[in-house]
Length: 408
Length: 115
Image 1: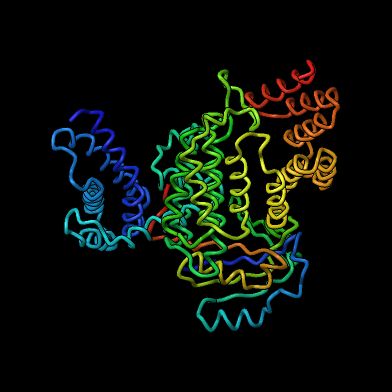
Image 2: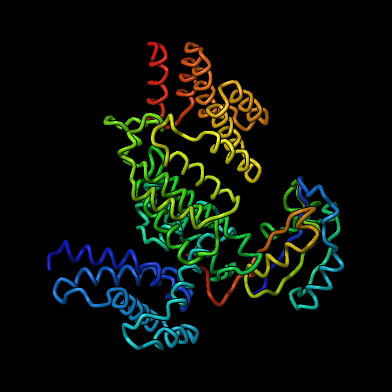
């Protein structure tokens, strides 16, 4: 067997099994670091042994057994305390070898892990980092690079979060009843941040893939929650445009300038299927419907802007943020004309939440351009360009201003 | 698992006071469930005295540790299975609405400090 085939087999088993192993070991030992280290070492020994021994029939079970044995070894060596010995006994009990545990127990373990990583008593940066580290298995150094901090800082952040989980006794449990309704939006919010971190102009693209994968896992684990299906659909629609978002020079392209042939049809189909499983007027379902209207339009001109404007009218009620109000103004600008858009934009700005927000300036520029005042619009696009932080976005806005100057 | 619940004032309290729970009901409820070990309202920070010993010398001064807009006005020691239970107890306390509560776990000295 080639090294590459083995590496792929290990990666596949890890993608499927990492969270299960970590989750199961945390449940029994309560020791997050031990669980992660054991899972990592199991993956490392697979890379070492599978080339000679071949890939086992049940790769996930093999990894689980190796990780569990490694955890038992560590605990035995450290087990002067009675409690640690009890953990060893609990770990050693399911000694039936590679038999996978009952499916719902495995499912519960991974859900427990996600809900604990996303507990509101942890700082939001820590929730995102801990989810990446523990549920997805991203190395600390990679997380640090993506969040523009040193590896030492990220290690401290993760350690602090794990210490808080232990000291404050954050439970390793999926909440039920009304508590689940309260906690689920927080979990979805972490996945959304993760996705955005992958989708941002200067972000880490692999995180978007991971967010899609996690949303898919969460939907399989919680099929009765429409907002989970809505979030998955939203991710899939946005993700379908990942290859069309930039031109050959790496400049960002707005929706109307993207080559729709380069949109990922399979992702759009999966998004529509996920949206079909969702219902209601929750914020992610509404955002997914908006994304669906864009993703399924034959061309920019065919976009059903009145359907999008209707979704924003409802979204602004459940999520009355300045950015939603801004997007609502843009949608009505397309559906009902620039005058209607500018009126809603003025309303959105009245709260003061959009002061110096570059996309609000760019939206005004676009509405004014379509209202027939290219000079004023070009000025505004340059103002917006001066306000943005990312270089690709700045280039895109300046390019739009130049186009208006030359009568484009 | 024991938690110290510091009861503090807040500069931005809930404005709709009709929904604020009743403190007597909270005390009766948490006592009945064995979730409240001890607790009391404290006198105003104006009555506080700070004590230090430096170089063997006793230094006594008027006032609390720190002059802040939010002040600790009471405390409860909770006995709960985990943080979620403690949060559920705290959210039913009227000062969660008209002030703010801080839940601080008692340190587990058997575990030793963790890095």
